[in-house]
Image (tube, rainbow, N blue to C red; front, side, top):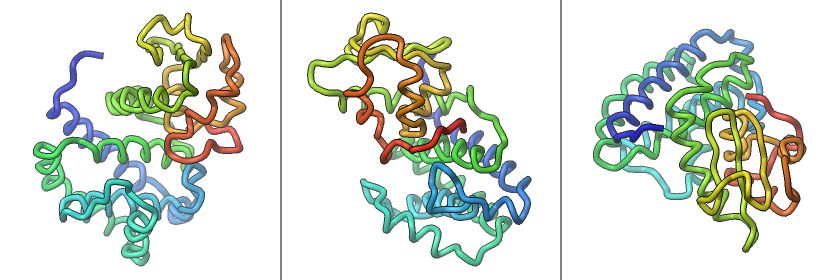
Length: 228
């Protein structure tokens, strides 16, 4: 991927926001109450409330480093009685101040919108955005996190359609454990959005069992297969 500037990342946040707004505006009342498989404690409305609340809180200077459960739950509870239209209006109002915040402090909020866009799409059964710049950026942020969680002395190689990566910076095909899958599948796996059985099915060489826990970057791996 070509070098990406902070301005590019902020522009990608705006594109992702627009996709998510179109997605939730196109959902029925019944669909917005659908449980999100990747966030099973939340409905589509709840997850969208968190996404909106995160932006509002970040601009207000209220963002804990760990994005703890109490903080994220507050986003949902404070917006429990708001309509999707109200949530969209709040997010649009927050957008410009948040873009200014990211220009000064960094584009950490990009990860939230990119990751959860696909979570929402999985719940609603509407594909899209899989080859976006944002997905590639978050993939590249999280691959080293997986690498840092590997058992000592073990190397991991990921081989996609057009992207590959090795935890030791070498040839991915020569790593101790090599997984091969489409680019998007690997990107989502780095976010704990693919099951252990899915990871096992991608094994090209080596013993995948000792490295499975390394993929639990954002919580435990799901028990069921995921395809969002």
